[in-house]
Image 1 (tube, rainbow, N blue to C red):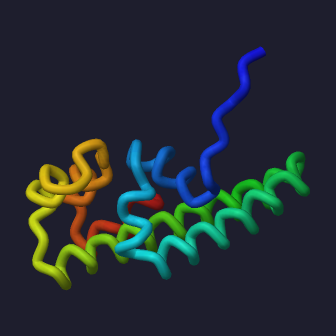
Image 2 (image 1 turned 120 degrees about the horizontal axis):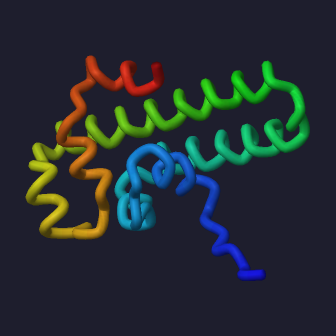
Length: 117
């Protein structure tokens, strides 16, 4: 039996939704948003484990996870807007493995709510 690599809790929404390979790279830039997602994700994971067989709780947890991810994507988008960063240049300059940048190029603030539905 192989040992699974355990990722920090805050990585999971991005690995699931945006296929991010390197979240640590933006942690320093968006520290408060990352911390909020990390803390929220841990709470939701504990709740999901506690009520594994309850379908209603699992659905609520899934919705709350989607909201956490959406809020963080909005924070990243606002970060790019604030510093007038072109996502393509940002990916080339700093985070070549960070696929979230390509994902963010497709999103606009009015479209962020659509990813949770």
